[in-house]
Amino acid sequence: MPISPRRSTTTGLIDEAAWTPALSARQPDGARALKIASERTLRNVFSTQTKRTVPTGVQSRRWDKSIRPRGPRPPTITTSQILYNESRVRAVVPAIEAHALAKRYGRVDALRGINLSVNRGEFFGLFGPNGAGKTTMLRILTGQLRPTSGSARVLDVDVVQEPLRVKSLVGIVPEVESPPSYLTGFEYLYFVGRVRQVDGIDRRINRWFDFFDLEDSRNALCKDLSKGTRQKLMLAAAFFHDPALAFLDEPFINLDPIYQRRLKGFLEEYVSGGGTVFMASHLLDIAEKLCDRVAVIQNGALIALGSVDEVRGREADLESAFLRLVGA
Ligand code: ATP
Image (cartoon, rainbow, N blue to C red; front, side):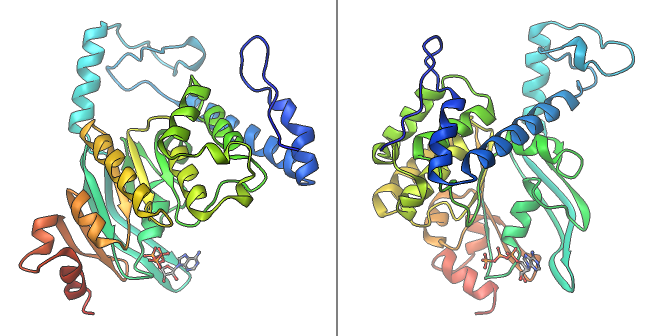
């Protein structure tokens, strides 16, 4: 029997309690796992928000006595000043800044002192041979992994000090993860919407269902979907809350040429609208067309960094330049 979440008669939104029997029937621990994951994630997001402090000299529009830091209240300033300060900070502070970032797994030096800065509104590509350190870099910058040494700030937030806040701000498409097998496509995106605390969840889901032609996944369990459809759901989830910065690990993988083109168009628009993309990929022909700047990493160290033209140099294309750079 297809599972259709019950809607609240007052809000029109889905009552999460209604999922419980359905999920239990599908997978013995499914309902419990969803409840725990949902509560934990919501708690993390909330705790991230309550830890938030108001930057010096900038009065938050959401100033709340319950989260007011100790000490004198900052002077009140006008909305125009806030907007001015916020846009100035946005323009000046890079989207990503990494200083001497290093990661050691036992005897393996996965990253060896990476220095990198990515500007707002930039489409940045990171390339490297298998095992070069790309995923490690992405996981550190998204607060999923602690570096052994060095530091990094993402959207002006320290990834080591406030990893949950980083996760709450950015969109992430991880390399190998799939949506939870025991949820339908609709339930997965609804869950993402609740965790991200966005408004208009149904509207957003419909938008993504339209964009990626996902209607068939509405009532189908994710475990029964094709790899490409699962990837589309992961992409929809990454952009569901309109993040200012998206980390994409092989976003085009498993997409057929139709949806590769659709995704390319979306990412181009996202960046021209002010969004920032940090993409790790092996697909150099696609990256060459999309990226503003690229870096090549090998054995945990950056061996090239610059605009696509700079890194391509005299070679015919980025792939030839890459092969020369890594000595293949
Ligand atoms: P690929 O292109 O194959 O996905 P990558 O560039 O993403 O590779 P990473 O996955 O970051 O590379 O791995 C960098 C190095 O760190 C590799 O030598 C890898 O074996 C090692 N490594 C990664 N994760 C771990 C781990 N959890 N424990 C031990 N070593 C690890």
